[in-house]
Image (cartoon, one colour):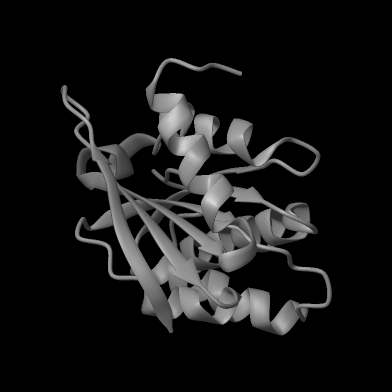
Length: 166
């Protein structure tokens, strides 16, 4: 269940985006996200050590089918999460018959283990971008964080907005 949602900012310009911070208890709560745009960017700030492959695969499959366009993964074991989302994307595109032959755009994914949460949030806010056809209707940027990381994610977002750079 999503515990709390806070609108962080709306950006101006040609690539207008709406950024929200969502408090979750676990990776399972990503199923309750409600993006407003057809495609969306997601940053996860969550520890994943001990989370089963099946749980991560189920979450990745759901997000891909709901319109995930880019993912920034941060936290313990986030590289594994990143890889699983990549695999879910390829599986989805293969099922549609567009991968490996045809016109397809990948879901852009990055992982930020070993970086500060503030740096990862900066990356999400300023360099997180959807590729190809996703870009046209990807106006939501959602930061999903567990309580442990919620305040740091919020502070990192606001620091990034004040011109603080990596």
